[in-house]
Image (cartoon, rainbow over all chains, first blue to last red; front, side, top):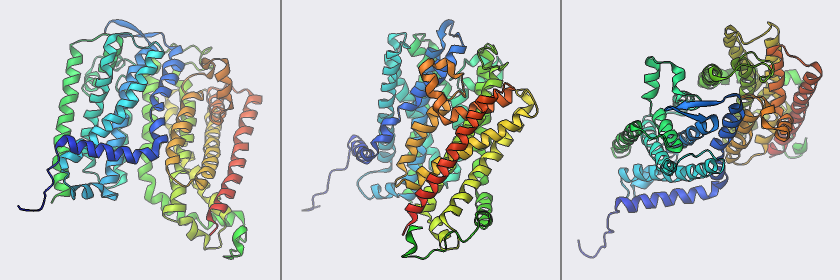
Length: 265
Length: 273
């Protein structure tokens, strides 16, 4: 190897930085969509939390009475992280993978499939954290935060977004057409509506149904956020954290393997 | 017609009905190929909402007719509003991307204009198709809900259904006009975030607009969806206030007419070659 300078291989951090920078440049032209992205949970909070909340007194959560708006707000925080991660890692990734052939182009550079998986997910997490932070400020301003534990709600939303981004990106690699996204919607709606977002999990009774709900990932996220903002932190919180972290790591490993088979063979 | 100089187009040679009838087979083919994709959106999603908000959340809500605009349960309150909001959502989504597609991506409208069809006929047939989608989705929705005991009379839901279809027509016409003028699809994201979602949440579908406080209540009354929700609910709950119903009806019909004129003008300008 003489004469020709071979560029040093990218470190994972350097690669992720490049991908994030690229996404940032692309998004600069769509700043209106970026800016309004945080509106959705706020509108839900005002409508359901306050409008419908006037018809409801308060709910019991881990033995404490929580006013309805304070009950719904952390759920909106968690579900907005969930929705954002889901959109970013399905529609956007599918478009880039299948139509834009963006990842093929990237692989012609020193980037690896692992870099792509990590970079895309990190970008999604950064975007989502901006929204979550803004929403937490809204909650604080409305007096819906009842404990210093709420500081940890931001990392909690990042964890939720990580778990769903990784798994959904993995699922997207199996998709063949836009029609397949109906299946995503069919999973997203019930998760959003039945994860104890708008009413306590007790509504499902004490049977199997409740166990099923408690075992779904979004429920873990919603309860985790609710525990942190109301300050009723229990051992269940640790269960949720481990659950979501494991889910994310598995998703990430699958994404990498799938991108290898799709793009490198 | 402005463009007759460059490309002579026998515009207006067909009657309104003939102009629509000639596109029947086209839209039938579109329907045959796309109805499956719409099933989740049209039927399953709204039913999830009814179950989650109406049945489960409703179980925690004290059903006081004085607070719920005359409804004896939260489910009975929320159903007419949800269906009206659903009619709006469907109408808007069916007249956003498909319109841009027909102009910009697939250029269907240009192809159709090369026939004796005029811009007016294209708009009519397109809107008729959207209204058909909305009407069938709302009909199924209302039929499924009938056994839940949320309707007070047998004729009310029929009139409510007409009101819901009218909501769909008004929103489809206005959205078509907007889409016909839009250059980039980024604008659709804003329509859903700044239009459809706030309307769904604050037009009295989920809670009585009196909960908003006096000022915002009046703002809600000015939104087109509220008029649809109000009509739909009055008919379903048999609490019809006829003068109010006349106002609601006039607003929706007025919007439809304005939207239609706006659509035809917008598309006419856009398709000038």
